[in-house]
Every structure is written in structure tokens, then in C-alpha cells.
Amino acid sequence: DGGITQSPKYLFRKEGQNVTLSCEQNLNHDAMYWYRQDPGQGLRLIYYSQIVNDFQKGDIAEGYSVSREKKESFPLTVTSAQKNPTAFYLCASSISGDGGQNIQYFGAGTRLSVL
Amino acid sequence: QKEVEQDPGPLSVPEGAIVSLNCTYSNSAFQYFMWYRQYSRKGPELLMYTYSSGNKEDGRFTAQVDKSSKYISLFIRDSQPSDSATYLCAMKTSYDKVIFGPGTSLSVIP
Image (cartoon, rainbow over all chains, first blue to last red; front, side, top):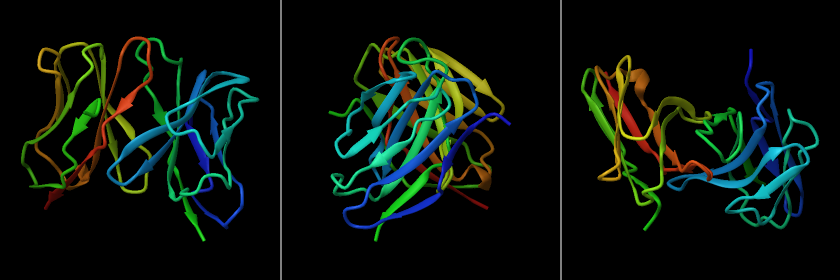
């Protein structure tokens, strides 16, 4: 089945620790995205990538880092510089980037909590 | 003013009711309009996609876009308990990233 796989489903971070969230897609999509979802605030864009080895900051990139070494994979690292990391993190992909309809498809999410 | 506004609810209706969910927006350049359904602790799934103005129907769901009023709607006919979820509107211009509304929480009571 084609889709987007996020892991782990639940993740706990200790003070000062970096943690990495995994996102893999087998849809052959060029573009991938990371969003953060907090209650009542909707989806906020952290980073996005329209092509391998290239990515751009979204609206709330501070305290996060990404890489795009393979078309299928777009991991997100939540660094110790992110002081309020508790949230639901969603990965998405689309056939292409900003141009055109850009319908995004989402993974099941990772819930990150601070210990 | 936020680019996309949506009443967060919660909206509670009896089973079988017609549900109307709405979003308003400020950017007249938006051309692509989407509705996503998100069950609790799950990722959003695409329900409806519309380009420019007009109506689009898919089973019990109808999406409506009124660009002159900068207003979009999602209607759910014969609502079911399984429709209980958060509904997110989303929209974009032809060249920029997608903007999501904050979502409306819907409960359909048996």
C-alpha cells in the first residue's frame, strides 16, 4: 500500500536531549513537509523540501532541523533549543511543491512529550 | 487578521442532521481549496478538493466556494456518528504554500 509512515507514534524527550522523528513515503512524491499541531492553533509549517538535498524553513523553524538525502525520507530533529516541543507532529508529502494544486497527504503523526 | 479563519466549535448535532462547516479567508489570490477530516490522534485525510469557485459533490459531502465573499463551506448530509472528527479547511494560491485553518470539532450524537 502506498502511503506515508511516521515513527514512532509516541516519543518522550528529556531536558537537553535531541530527538529525531522519522517520515518515509512510497508515493514517489517530490515534496515533503513537517507541521506542528497544537490545540486551537491548526497546522504550522516547520520545514519543507521540494527536492532531494534541498529544504526551506517554514514559519516556525527555530529549534528544529531536517535533512533530505533520499526522495523517500525526510527526518525531523527536535533540538534542545526548542523550549516547548510538546505537540503533535505531522509529516506530509505532495507530488510537487508550491506550484499548482499541491494536494498534501499526511502520515498518522508523532506525539512528542517532554519528561 | 488571520489569513484563514474557522470557528473552532465544538459543534454538536444529532445523527441525520445536515452539517455546515465554514471558513473565511482574506487573500483573494487563493485558487485551490481543500477540506481535510482529522480523527482524534490521527493525521488529516483529504475529503474534498475544489479549484476556483463553484460546488463539488461527493456522496454525502458537498464543498462550496464563494470567491466574491471569500467564504468556503462543507456540507455533510445525513450525518453519522462516524463523521465525528475535526474538519480543517486549507487553501493556496497557484505559487505559494498551503494555508490551513485551525479546524472545527464536530460531534454527531446517535
